Structure formats: structure tokens, C-alpha cells
Image (cartoon, rainbow, N blue to C red; front, side, top):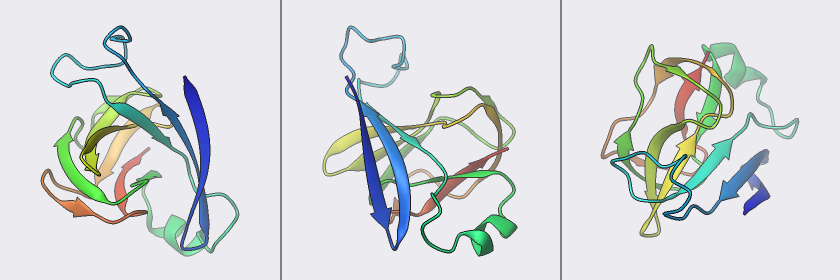
Length: 128
């Protein structure tokens, strides 16, 4: 079941779509990863001053929807991705969350490392 949430972080609004996966929904789950909850991140809405951020970015940013630890990076710079493709696994509150691509493109920059802790709203990577 797909559910949409609007989250505001430091005055910037994000639209987040979440779908709970089961073992029967294996088309989205990678072979080496247990069923998780994918999270689609979209660019910030008009709330907040994002013009300064966008000037320095190489592509569409993907932000952390919640604080947590980067368990596994599933892509690297130069990889081509499709919309809804898993990008990384973020552990938050003892749950593994799949962060998925909001659009198709190439990974132009990765801002995090496996094992790194990230704050909510922290920049994860960019899709060109």
C-alpha cells in the first residue's frame, strides 16, 4: 500500500512516498536485501530558500528523510538508475529503509559513505 507524507525540515517541505513491502513483492526487493520500506525523495517545494543550495548542486539532490546510519550504498558515481530504483539502505529506529530514485538519470555525486551517520535532511547523493 503506497502512502504519501509531507515532511517539513527546517522550513523546507518534502513529499515522501512510502510503500510497505512483503516477501511476495519481490520485484522491488534486491536479492541480497531483506524486505524494507522504500522511501522516494523529491526536490524541496517552494518553502524555504533552496536557490543557494541548487546553485552548487550537479544534479537533483536526494536527501535523508530521517536521521540514521547508512548501512549499504547500492550505487556509485557514474551508475545509471531508473525511477524507483533502490539507491541505498538507511537504518533508522532499528528499521532498514530503502531510499529510491525519484527519477531516472546518472549518479553524478555521492555525498555519504557506508557506516556514516546522517541527519534528517542531510544530502545523500545527486542524480543528473
